[in-house]
Image (cartoon, rainbow, N blue to C red; front, side, top):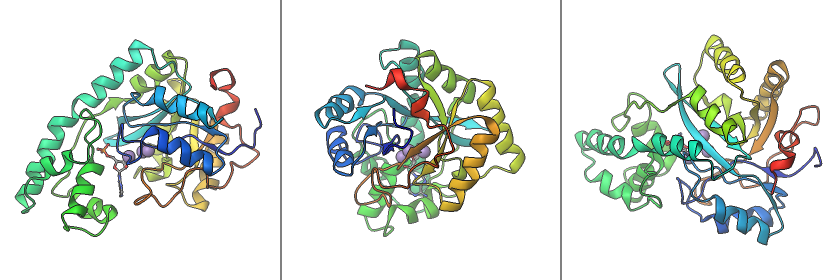
Length: 284
Ligand code: AMP
Ligand code: MN
Ligand code: MN
Ligand code: MN
């Protein structure tokens, strides 16, 4: 496959915390000139068959995808998986386990918000949920915007849903090693999502990359909607230093909330190995 490709390998549908269906996302990606696409819902692969079928309809090539929530050094890290067999039972069980704690966490988040006078947040967030197993902070953020507590979802995260804020509940997600092995065991490629987003010290970041690599991780997102142009350069260097392939994805969630449209980011720097070069036989 062409090393220079309009690939968008990271986005979310109603099956997790996006607002569009897999079909609407495929149509949007195709309209924006995406040539290789992956739907990467959080901790969930229930939308994969629909996404692959919709991609076929638009003559876009497709890779199966997911974004797994992991706890590493006390922080949440996201690991994208691409090109796995979606029928793999071990992967399905791991994802189910990872989704498992979300209901109880959401009720605790709601209790925290009630203490600062925001009532009924659990029920309110549920109205925005497309998948009952996948209630996320994003759904709470949408409810708080709808009810006028904040003007936009970003403000909700800053004031209510991040560490130390009333609606934040510390949570233990999957172990890094497990998430990587679920993906690679199903024939896929594991990728560190938006590394610049984490608040790690340089030592912790080095540990993340080293352990990721030691457990069989093979890629890192370089060009993502979560990175600045300077950060593309920083993580292009990290990819080379650690011998990782590079990925590109908008992390698109919603036409109303996302500042990065599907398929519109700069292309990957040409002196990196794109993840799709390692995934040739898995492309549909
Ligand atoms: P959860 O998996 O329930 O912890 O929710 C995480 C999701 O919240 C991420 O995947 C993003 O979609 C969203 N998110 C996290 N931080 C922010 C932020 N500062 N502004 C808007 N959305 C955010
Ligand atoms: Mn999300
Ligand atoms: Mn993420
Ligand atoms: Mn994402």
